[in-house]
Length: 250
Image 1 (cartoon, rainbow, N blue to C red):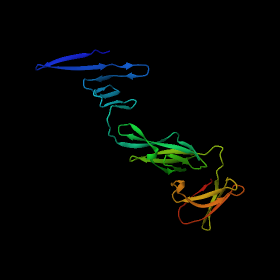
Image 2: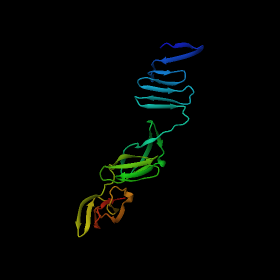
Image 3: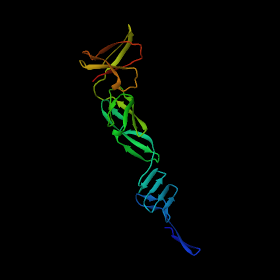
Image 4: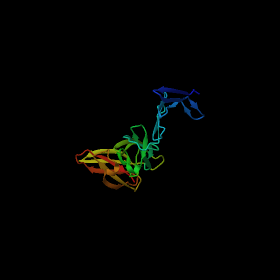
């Protein structure tokens, strides 16, 4: 332990007492303080990796560590901050077709701290991919896929936005997915057909001119039934617009 120095200086008949107290490193089984220091009125103490702004009055104190990056605040009556970005997260980025995934959001601040934003205060949307929709509580529902397909969701809050990429996965051992086997143009009609449907069950033909729209915004073009072998055939009159088609089986 270092010595404590007390220096007394007399100036024009007045006594001025100036004190400095320094502590060396202290270590326990789970905690180490590299160095600290405090003058008689608080102030700043620092080492290579540690900085502490102390206040004896306990109105406010700020401690930061550069590695790992941490900021500690104590006794603050209030704080002004700016939200610099919004992070969208989930427990996993892989979601099985037809299942749900809870989304979360955190606001990142200009002092490198963050706080969670309630999901109900976030405006959720689907940027792209087979996500059927996201409700007001941030619960995303994955659509049907025949192969593992990426999707991107977005959250907006506090003047910031953030995105998260998900992977919608085929359900292993689940119901087989209808497959388009052929497509052609004949007599002003666009015709496509395929197989692997459930015999006797209905299917829906969806269409849109913007493939980036969520499925809930696609137009239902027709409702048909798979034949006894699970096959299907769809004939659609061409309109001159570039259109995308999708087969949806309940």
